[in-house]
Length: 80
Image (cartoon, rainbow, N blue to C red; front, side):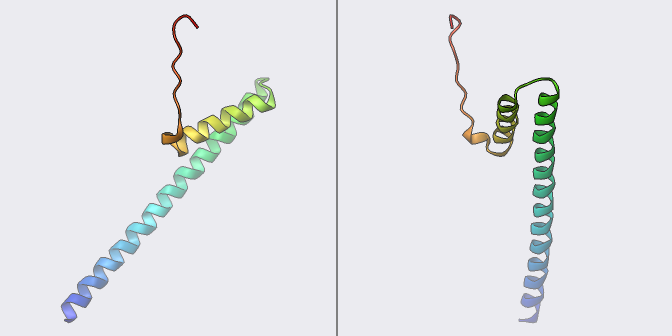
């Protein structure tokens, strides 16, 4: 029974390490997205884009990166 406990402890330890690595990767990715969205907003303002539009641009980027399944694509006809 000792062998089973040792194996279970090993597996549990590996799982903990993998969970921690996943948390770190997800955190780094989220931080990168925050920085890009903020830079997009600041650069848009610096280029003379109105605040509300710059905010919408940054928000659009954020939504597309964090919730791609929520993005709705609207196709328009050639005559529009």
